[in-house]
Length: 142
Image (cartoon, rainbow, N blue to C red; front, side):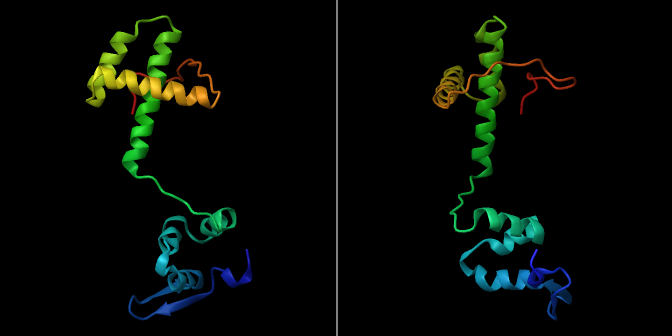
């Protein structure tokens, strides 16, 4: 890490009665159109500098938490149905269970499964369910 970012360099903020890291002040100065000050608060100095080393000059789009939760749900639906198929079971019961769990229709569960299958096939990823780890059940789900 460069000397200009050393942790012992700080400025006293009289309004907050606390010391502020020099890097934090610099981020506030350039941060008018940026979320760097917030990233500093979340990651801390060392991880933020590593983030900047890797992604500097790149536009980063941050998905909403709801989008991420839906992606996890969709993946779980795919894996749950795939596991039943792999073990030679009937899909209809697991589809009904998943539909109730997520408050969606059976048709929507089937649609999600096909969307995930097509997506993974497009990436040439073949999913073979593995045995569950001790204490973790695929049936519990997110």
